[in-house]
Image 1 (cartoon, rainbow, N blue to C red):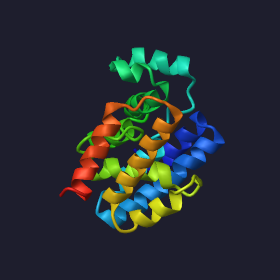
Image 2 (image 1 turned 90 degrees about the vertical axis):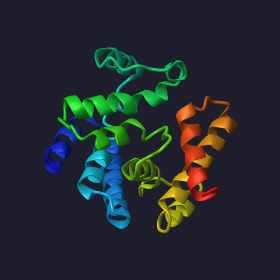
Image 3 (image 1 turned 120 degrees about the vertical axis):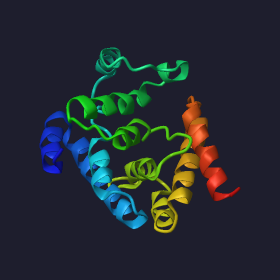
Image 4 (image 1 turned 90 degrees about the horizontal axis):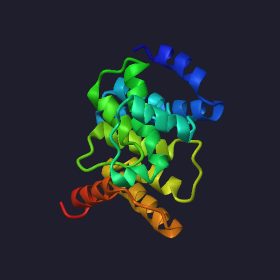
Length: 190
């Protein structure tokens, strides 16, 4: 699908803040794709659509999960914040006619990460968390790390995310732990 058409359709279903976030993620993803040798078109599309279901209320997400016949594991059922990527991948497929499996996967795992993340998966995971509107503590450090190593930047984000979840007493999905361990093996124990 044409990127400008995606933007026109996306602005109709997103809040202004969410749309601006999507534009920023798409630009960062495109830049990282160029830097690390990934398809910049795929990165831009995945960046634009990664949060296309984020503004949906929990009850609507629940309905979409049933409609799209999305299987949730027991832990995922208890973490509604992780539903939007799964529903978003289906919306990208159904409503935006995205058929590329790598784009859909990058959207699907952009919040949790996963074991054996592809380059595109890492780019979308990272772009979502370091785009220019993000100003949380440590984001500048991660941006700097991303200039030299996408794996080290993803590992840093996973570590920070897990520490945050522990501090808040929240569940950590096993996919996030698998992603972290895989990145650790790639960066530290290679």
